[in-house]
Amino acid sequence: MAQRTRRTGETIQNVPEILKALADMRDRLTRTSIDVRPYGTAYHAVHMVIRAVDALATFVTGQRDYFSVGFKPPSFDD
Image (cartoon, rainbow, N blue to C red):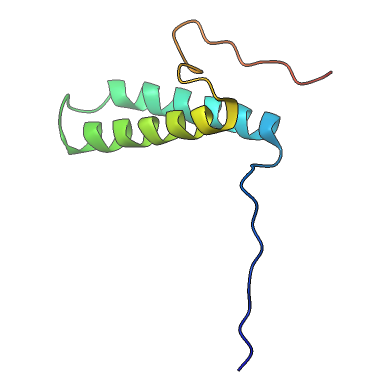
């Protein structure tokens, strides 16, 4: 049986679209975290996903504080 290989790169394509989707997801998760019991299971799960979103944004942009307070998504219309 022939072995199939998959070639993957170390970069993420469509960065502007990914960052916009991450910003939207992070915003929704942040709003959701307000409605759950503080420090409960759902609270920790939501914040774990927020940290994962932040980690992916850090990987893509190189900026650890990409979604800091006052964040405004960049315009990629250029």
